[in-house]
Image (cartoon, rainbow, N blue to C red; front, side):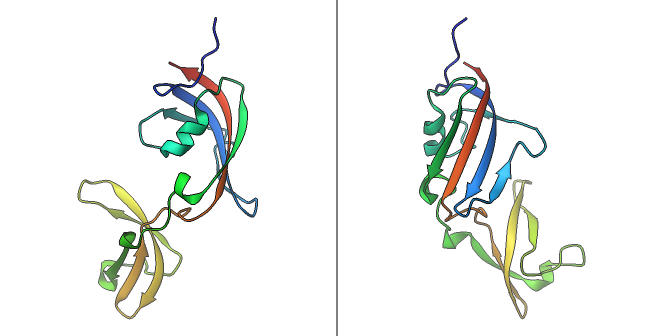
Length: 146
């Protein structure tokens, strides 16, 4: 049996950890021992991160340092919205630091971080929380299907 190499159409089961520049863990599938499944090219990871996985095989453990543009991108000012405070209630208070799910027109939820509350205006940031951060991705490849 030949070893399955990750290609552009592969399905990959892997553990990952995302670490920030200070070494702290931002996310890890190992915490609950629930590996991630990825279909290469499905858009769930950036193209640059997928390029890091190409050519890896089952059993590989690798670490990749990624610039913000290669990971979660730079913060986009167009993803910052000003919402009327009346849109918030007892279950979703407008408090700085709160992460609130906002239902989109297509029915999906999009999390937003409350950055500022000033009078009746609430500043909500819909950028990815790791946007603008250099990160280290650590991966352990568990299964590959082509």
